[in-house]
Length: 378
Image 1 (spheres, helix red, strand yellow):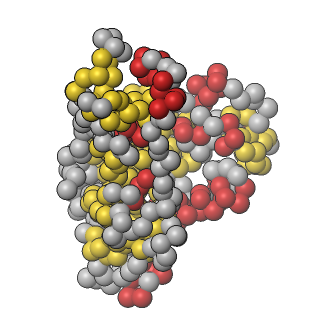
Image 2 (cartoon, rainbow, N blue to C red):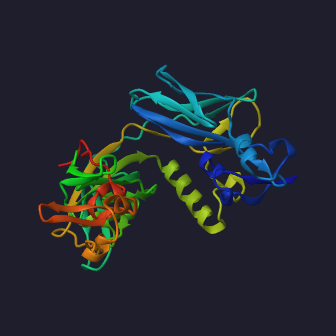
Image 3 (cartoon, rainbow, N blue to C red):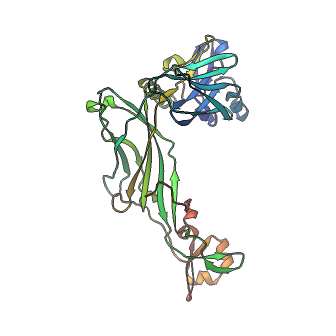
């Protein structure tokens, strides 16, 4: 018997802190266990991450990260309806399959040819997500953070449902000074601005996945479930904010797997710290008695919707910008080019003279914003 280190997925390869020791009680031949991450989703570009575990005495560095990524596998999605979607490796250990429309009456599985063996996930019919009934924002007090809550309609058959949500944030930002002029360092002149840089849009992917089961709600109706908490001391809620919600229905087995993995990661500091048998993995080797770790779920659709909130009216923000224009005596000590190189921008230009302020107070791009309005913005 020997100890091994488990790496839960390719993302963990990038973070040495995710590697944790455990006693798997596995034979020497099983010191390289296949680890699979990903989901089969109808009409989606699906990513599957393949890696292996490494012996405990391995010195983990950039070289072993590449070694742990599985790069010599054949990967595809196959259905009982005869459909097959081949995956292509786009980077070390990442395989992408463009999955077409899945039939709700047929089962689908991920199949892998690796090191002369065949692995596959347990075939499952696609879990279909219902529509979202409502998403709203609550702020108990003006000085408190903001909760995003969700409600779904009760299932017609009254059976429990299981869901996974991911998010994407977009919000409007405006400069403190809305200048229509800018300094051109090439000509050393103040010229009309080529574009409006006083209004823009910022983006954030929290990288957070939230799950819930309707079993914990009365009548199996998810009502007022908190998706996430948002800080109100940033520029998110000064003007207009949008939370994009992606909802996917999952099976009870996938829900239990993800919950257990999350609990074990929290308790022991690693994704797969205990023995693999303690996780409800649905990846099996059909050609030998090899172990594998992971769970590949099957979903029939993803419900994506955008939810807006207006800052100042619906939500109060505690964000304040410290912006001031340069004093006359400061401006007198430097040339325009020197002020520009020092990070100042034209905040006001009139026949009476030029006013300067810090770049972030004049140009939203200096705050990290993009000028182009998103296609979904309203």
